[in-house]
Structure formats: C-alpha cells, structure tokens
Image (cartoon, rainbow, N blue to C red; front, side, top):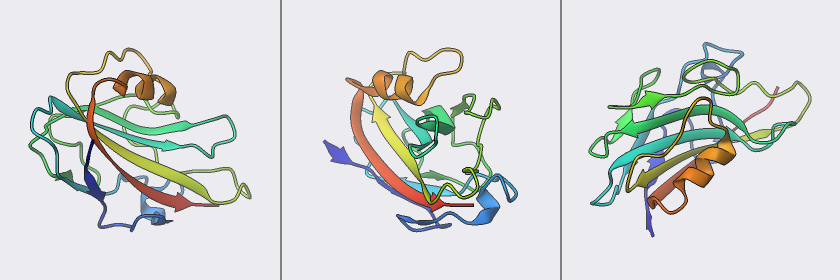
Amino acid sequence: MTAIELTSGMFADHEEIPRRHTGEGEDVSPSLTWSRVPDGTSELVLLCEDPDAPGGSFLHWLVTGIDPRSSGVAEGELPPGGQEWPNGFGRVGWGGPMPPPGHGTHRYFFRLWAVSESLPLHGKPTVDAVHRAVKGRELASGVLVGTYQR
C-alpha cells in the first residue's frame, strides 16, 4: 500500500503540539500538508484521535469528503471539499488536545486516508467506527503524531 506523506508546519512528528492548537490555547486546528495521494482516490478522510485518553480513543477531529487533488489545509480552516463531524467534546469540527492534568503525555494521531469510496458514517461516529469504515476502502494512508500534556 502507498504511504501518504503527512506533515505540519506547526510541529514535527512525535513533537509537542503548540498550546495555540489546544483546548487551553486558542483551540485552532493546525495546518497540515500531504502528498503522494494515489490515482483512483475518491476522497480523503482526516481523523485526529487520542488513544491515551482515560475512556479509550478520543475523537478530536473527523473530516470526510476531502478533495483528493488537494495538498493540505491551512491553520484554522476546513480541508477543501471536507465535511466536519462531531468530535468527542460534542462540537462539530476541531477540538484541541486537553488531557486530564497530571495524566502524563498524550499522543495525538493525525491519520489521513485515501479511500476508494465514501465512508458509510452517520450521526456521531466513534473512532472505532471510522477505523471499521475505512477497512476495505483504504488505498493509502499517512500518520503524523503530536504530543501534549497538562
């Protein structure tokens, strides 16, 4: 399977996400850049999840329907053609890192998938539901991991 290159101008892979992009800061989504999207991609799907959350993987951002010809998203913007879904905080769109104080460093996985068809998602999908929906539709993927602690 092809690997999509996923990066951010705000933080490097496995480095701390700036406070500006967290629930303690301005809660603005970080800029992201991607490349190597394969031919035949119907759409891109972007997910940001925190697998270190006390209650299981926490959804911070889910965007489907992203234009496969796009190459990124600016800070605080919606990816081209994208549809945002409810996050784990109950709001539609980005919800920045806000781990429990003293809970240690949490990892935030930004995952970008190139898929062959739209995902069958409805209502308020969970992280697990997104992973299940991607299975069998995935043409390529990329991952960028940021960290944060309070």
